[in-house]
Length: 201
Length: 296
Image 1 (cartoon, rainbow over the protein chains, first blue to last red):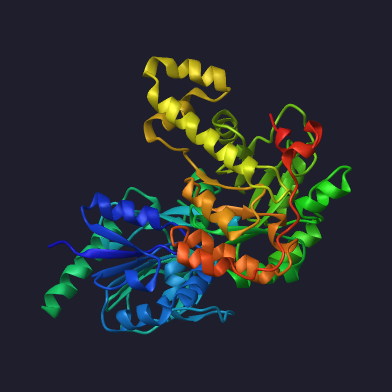
Image 2 (cartoon, each protein chain N blue to C red):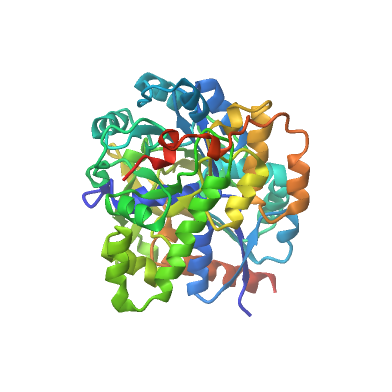
């Protein structure tokens, strides 16, 4: 049986995630209200504005319910705003968040929109060719525990920062795999879901 | 690092994709920008005056003082857009230089060029432009716009023109889908639209960039209706800070755009919003004062 993936559809590029999962033959459900979250096997949190999505998570009552599901092992894939919402600490911000990942994140880490960019990233875990990463007013992770598996880093002013990371049931990228035709991250996430389903059955 | 590329069309159009399902609010001060951000706006439009006041003041409306845009940018973490006059590429270069996130080449301001729009491909910063029909939308995209919005009739609190422009674009996309392939070139000619973009729209069945509603949206119900009509999100200009309780109305419109299908919720959030902005009937505005007529 293929898993049912909830795609958080409060704001942002959720349609692009749905299309990516559709290309891989996987069913999705848009999550807009508390009643939508029961029965999903995994969750994708799209790019968008993290303050907007965080506010709507709070208003809808989805915040505590989602946090609880992630804590009890629900596989989750967050891109850009999704990464910000998943991190426990957001530099210089008290905005609402899920905070499931013990990590520190910096918003708009590269500056304004004029600093947004595309770059082909070497990601050993995905193999060749390099991944076409689209960074849009992107964040990056500035601190995380040793148990996390760093999948990709990105350079800013000569320093390397975390651009993609996996820890337990959480997968997160600072860039937007959903904006490209390269589905390797979505496939990687499906593999995570498969493994976690095997463990629980 | 050596293969890093900024200012690509992908990152320009990509930011618009991140704004989808959101509300972009006009603000004139850092305090208003904070209110908008706290209410859940996905971006703000930094202005010296909202369209209703521009309409009332008359005279020539120009780009905002860059200092105002910078102050608003410093006050919030969400993207900050700013308006340049139609054709005024130097105003646009100034907005790019101060690090605005998006430029609206806008008919709300007095046009600076009565024939040509800005060549938007010549910028790293993305542009949004207004349209009343498919030809206008595709001309702007051909010039490099990475996002489109309806023109509506700004500063009126009257949604009818935004609805008309939205339906017009959708009707013409359906028409384009229905004609045989060998008639597309004539369609392009008749609509003054680039042929390649007409072919793309015919194949995909939609505009190649994100399309927002703008111009006259004043209530949560207005915003939800525009989402039902198939638009990707909503600009609210004068509708919020010209109303009785801006913070509450802003929150309600944000929720309405996300939950446009949930009528119980729409009913609940539409209650006790205080006074809406004063509306203007379009027929009472002389043709030459209609902002939607600006743009070529």
